[in-house]
Length: 116
Image (cartoon, rainbow, N blue to C red):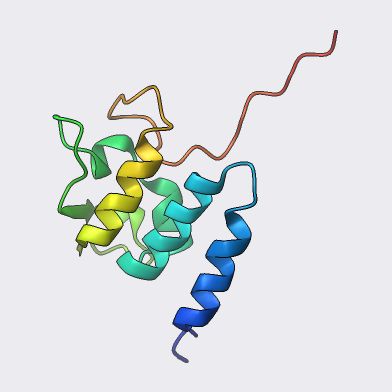
């Protein structure tokens, strides 16, 4: 099986510059860097719960323990979270007002305004 292509630093910077102009810039930046710096796949990122990433005291964990159900190969694994990624995740966490351990860490759907 072929190795997945990774972004160069210049390409990553270009993507981050682009998402900085969007409505959910902090969320999108955190998602991209979770993949790039943490090595998580899209489905793994989408499956993260608040309790997977955030300690009881509200700080970002040093490692994320993915269950077999969260991984592609159905084997649990531990992802070490660098200081840079912890900072990025903490910046995004500020935007989340509900911090219940069972809710998704990244919010992907937003309530639609009701028709008047």
